[in-house]
Amino acid sequence: MNTINHLDRKKTALITGASGGIGYEFAKLFARDGYNLVLVARSEDKLTQIAQELTNKSGVKVEIIVKDLSEPTAPEEIFTKVQQAAIKVDVLVNNAGFGTYGFFHETDITTELEMLQVNVVSLSHLTKLFLKDMVKQGYGKILNVSSGAAFQPGPLMAVYYATKAYVLSFSEAIANELEGTGVTVTVICPGATASGFQQRAAMEESKLVASQKIMDAETVAKIGYRGLMSNKTVVIPGLKNKLFAEAVRFIPRKMVVKMVRSINNKQ
Image 1 (cartoon, helix red, strand yellow):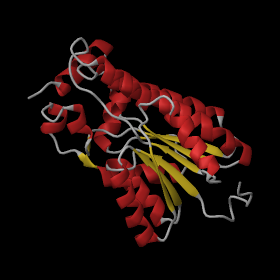
Image 2 (cartoon, rainbow, N blue to C red):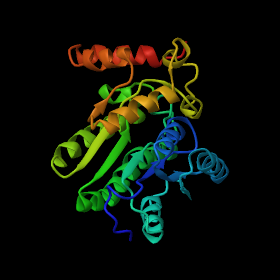
Image 3 (cartoon, rainbow, N blue to C red):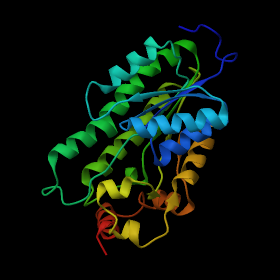
Image 4 (tube, rainbow, N blue to C red):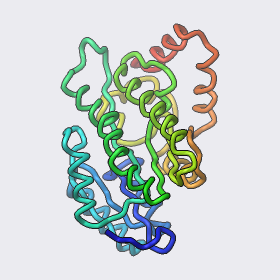
């Protein structure tokens, strides 16, 4: 293991879900600032292409790990590969995640169990594995990608909204636990973002996506990156998203659920 002080060596960021969308934009930002990278995703071709691009442009070292985080063994396998390569991870970005759309009694349980594994279990497991070394060395940053969905229940995306509520709660709790350790935790809660998410969730026709101009992944990543570097705990991109996150605390719960159902309905 490299024993050089973290202030003297080039830092490394590990990013999951790095083959596109917000994860890819995060990778570009870290590379721009001289971070070496460990990029994790399912697509070897996309990761290889991105690694070459960032190495050529920024001169950083980029390692790729091809893993599907819906597999329960993936977090341990990722951690083992990093340890074997003697890579010290200074920043962990838990970006990987996906959603499903439809009535819970009609949606596919296998897909939802995989979503729980990716959005909740693997995120928690990776955090556990890398956090111990961060605390030991007295430095580290964790960025968890939640969603504006975290602040209220979401009919037609019931399991997805619940997973993002977990990520928000989990992140805020461990951020508090880690005060004074030199390790910070940031959670970003973007609204609908232009990426491959909507297509995979089969929700392109919902009012949430089809009836409004949604933020692009580059903008979301830049806001999240600034929040991470300034040690903010909760980052909500966009004034409208911030206002809605605050407003749901004062609106009767039953009304909030009806409002979200209306937004998630197809046009």
